Length: 280
Image (cartoon, rainbow, N blue to C red; front, side, top):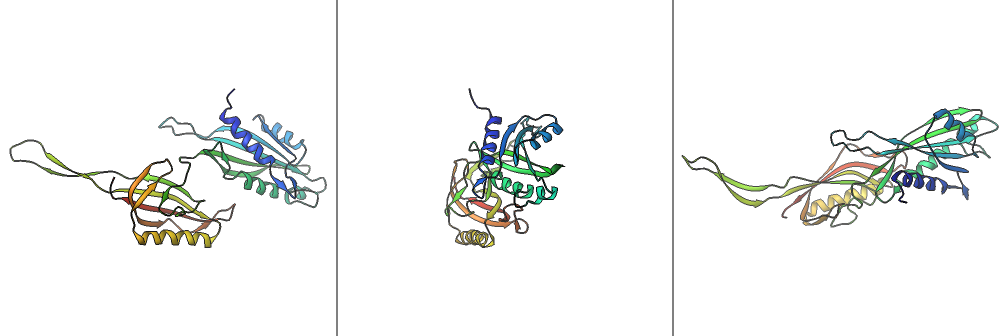
């Protein structure tokens, strides 16, 4: 029997949660995939498990593109629960014998954020929030969206590390045009066109430069600017396996200020690279 896409996503999340370690032992005592049903009953059930516990619940699909009648991405809800028998605050912040929900949620985000599922899906955190706190038990919810990746590799141009290995890049091919000369004769209807061959085509890399810290991102930006100054033409390979010959880097544009990732602390810079394909 073939495995469904829903089952593949749930299994990958359950396995990743089960593998989280803290001080040499599993962070979560209980990890289960559960069916979405009455929310109060589900919250009460996770609180009765051996804690800390996690339930993985597939919650449906986001709205898709109505104009093209395409479905949206699936969504996954992860319910996390922990308990303190002494003080409710310990269930939130932790104590000597209790792992607090704050620590658990951060460890789970580190394990699931950017998790690759079935080779072409990447798990994205949508939001997280506390959803229940009763009698020393705290339940926290995180929602994720497994998004299909448009391409399975980074685009390449001359220097393989031009944008770094962690950056998010999309490639957009610009318009390919043929030059022409048009003319007409007096008294003769219509226009005559003489084709003069294809001309240069713009190609754009757009996305976000990502690096572990500012020094690493500075090195990536210097490398891009050095490549721009060289102005050498070479072949480009995009994420879909297409090769574009005789390309040269024309412009490097930073989009907005440098920022930091709220979860990983990585240095971030939105950007655009404009290439010109000189010949086909």
